[in-house]
Image (cartoon, rainbow, N blue to C red):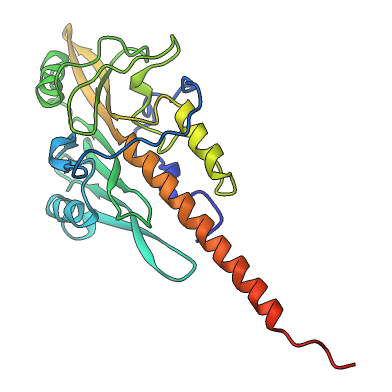
Amino acid sequence: MRNRIPKFMRVAALAVLSAAGFVGLRAFAQAPATDAIPAAPPGGINASKLPDTNGVHLGMTQDQALTVMRGLYPGNLLVIKKDKFDNGQEWITSLEGTAAETCNGQCSDLLGAYFSSPPNPPQVIQIQRHMQMAPGKQPTMEATVASLRQKYGKELTSTKSGVGVIAWAYDEQGQPINPQGPSNFSPADCAGGGAPGVGPLSTALPDLVASLNRNLCSRNVYVTAQLGAQSIQGTPVVVGVNLILGEKSLTFRDAVATKQYYDAKQQQQQQQQMKNAQQQKAPSL
């Protein structure tokens, strides 16, 4: 495997997001370091219980996500991005779809699903969606917030992330939670960022786990929506929505598994090099 951070650890926002962009990720609140790794739910993740947008759920397998995305974005509307290990094994890193043009370039609906890395079976760990509303079809702020609440439940009461930002948090069984932390901790900052705190693959495994545990955003499941608004005849309407969903506990576990896999491959290579050296015959004198 290449000696760098896998793509799923540095998931980038879709390049086609509006210039306003998504809410900037602030410094993540820190907690005391431990060696605990978040345990998966009994029986594994049930993606149908986790948040979704447009039918693409966090925790979906690669095949499940492909089926949904191909239905939403047929033909060349869907871009499938891949990476590969040094041995040639390929895996899908992301699926990025663009809705068919229906508004003469005045609106857009873009959806990206990002996968965890092998050796664990790839699952959706982050989803990004950007919607730009067509003029004359911009919903009111009131209607948009009501729709979000109907889909994701009651939002967290304090996000500390600015005007127009709404956030939700869940455990890995899809139950709403209200994560707590110091004054600089905002759950609204947690959905993005891939795996905050993950360093180079040269980082020792205990240091990697401790770094992830210090970051309060490295556990649980988050959804954050940023609503761009303007006033039309005194009524606030939504001109754009940026949505990020993140499965951070799954990201944590897969980051550790990837590190363990990388370490094992490195050790195997070193052992083979030592074996080859020992098998070399002494030179004739």
